[in-house]
Image (cartoon, rainbow, N blue to C red; front, side, top):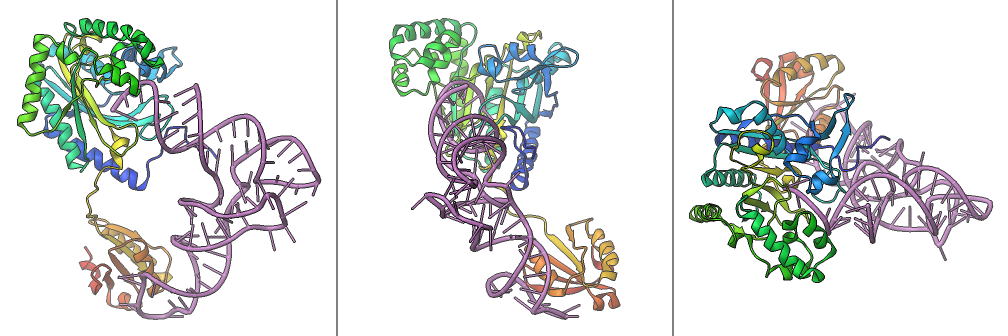
Length: 404
RNA sequence: GUGGGUGUAGCUCAGUCGGUUAGAGCAUCAGGUUGUGGUUCUGAGGGUCGAGGGUUCGAUUCCCUUCACCCACCCCA
């Protein structure tokens, strides 16, 4: 038997229903916020992710599906969505065109990792990117958009917020942090020793308890922000407070991708395992430049669809299902024609085999039909069909032309 | 990449201290029921006991290897 690849799942039944419900809900809300759908390729040149996500990240370092295509191009299956959208934005020269551009996307992403709860090799993200707006009101808008989506789905969350600073304040801070860790290097775990060399900021979200106790006294980025970053962060938190949106400042919140600056956030949920981030994002004012575009401020986010699938509260009402059955072989044709008409305005199941009256009722009930429609000798004589509402336990006989 | 756990019917799981033909519940199908369903009764189908190798007269059971899934680390949505 051929099986699906490790970490690559099929979506069926309840899961696929939840998936479509998520997409239609998120799409409708994103449009209300002025975002338009964008579709970018799954395969991109490897250099795109090296320059955007960053070589210091594990995603680029060891998790990409990377290969050479038949034209000997070094290509990757996208590990995340932002890089492709920014590439498209620059390629279309929208950076030159100026103005504001807002796009949302959804689709599969690929990371070669060891699967666990909430982590797959092929997973799906819904994301949105806003270009051309430096205002913190846009950061706020993005947060509100996520909040609206999650609450429309009935998904509970906690919002964690941090500021990662900008090219003015981040490098000096990083230096201070490195000095701090190196001063205590004999007390930190092996992973942190490695991180200090590769990507020092990442030590802050180390899960090792003894490291965390130590880092309580580490210099905080929020208290080393430059004037502009500090003012923006203060304004954003003030706006959130004003709007009654609960958040916690997490000075140890670090985004895994190199391109973030200033506002960084994560929506987390309890009870879905160790991988508890259901949405993450922030501002990336420098990324367009990194990808050869004209400097353009931008802010965006991505939601991990699989991670919230089981948290979604599905709406109760379903469109009623009609079961159609005939009692004699020679009436199947007539039954089929009648039932097919009903497909204009209802969900219809047609039974192709003749069955006894009781058997049809039984079958209808088993497949969860609301209505059982049976065609027997009596009905053929009078050009009607017998109809029973299985929920209300009422029945009637309908002329064929009143079926719709 | 590292560590731990689990693989027996479509699903949830028993079981075999190594022994003939591997079980249950649910689900499916047929019948009891030739015009009134849900509850009920009877019966049937469905398994290379994850795969490969070893030990043995004999392995689903013991040993080795491998694969898959789950959970955690790493990392991240």
